[in-house]
Image 1 (cartoon, rainbow, N blue to C red):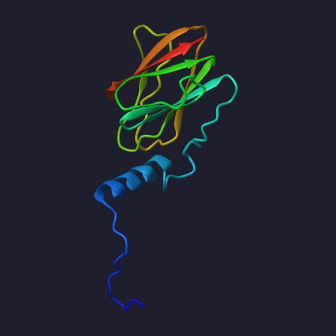
Image 2: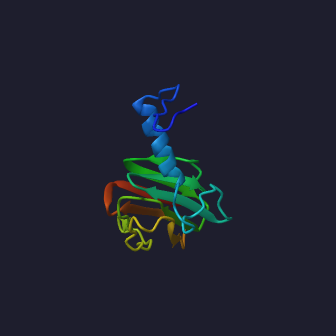
Image 3: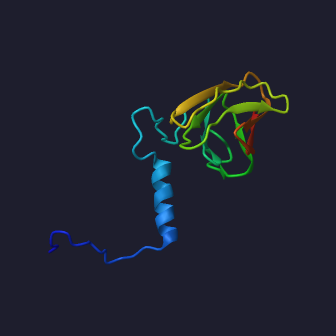
Length: 148
């Protein structure tokens, strides 16, 4: 039994690495965010692919033949039969904006502030082809959508 003012000392101690991973896991779940957060259920509607854009990485969620792929640098590829790609923004510290690269005809998103978790930008792919994009505020993060 604890006495008033006594400190609780857990029987198990976790390393700093385990504590950091647990914290990052909570961030990834969107813990504490309001109802405006997009529900990441990893299931796409027919004809749709989804790409998560978060602080420091992008991840294919569904609709891409590569499966769930995470990239914290370099090029993310999504090969899809879908004609609609949904970019879902979940960053909590950085601004994000998806813009076309290499003359790609996709539309640019607006600037997404860290106060807008769950914001969505939908791109319609009119024809088969290769569509390049980059996150303006994280230039090391880029991607290619290959529409079949």
